[in-house]
Length: 159
Image (cartoon, rainbow, N blue to C red; front, side, top):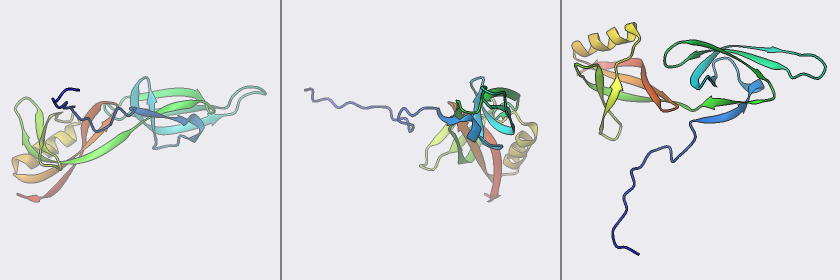
């Protein structure tokens, strides 16, 4: 064997899947579902009973968690749907660059510089105004299926 050590870049998910299967009939309102390869939050579920030998079908109306688009899907209730793993993480805001990227402080003291400012105008002005006033801001980053976006803001007081 060789004496040199091998260094592997560690990714926290250990190759875990971006989604997991769940029976369509068990997905409820405010849950998550993948429609057209996009992670969505379910806003409405209706189940229809069909004829003698048919399947009951679930009609999902959901909103994309990243771009806010409304999507619909109809799935037999006994079939499996993909449900995205959705995680929320809080980071402290350090800086906002001129090109619209934010610099965030992670829990272990590193910086995370690959996130853009949110597209939501209300949240965008809150972040820019609060940062301009020199407040200590904590942003909540929602991540799912390889995408990340700032979804909320907390003010933890002046610096």
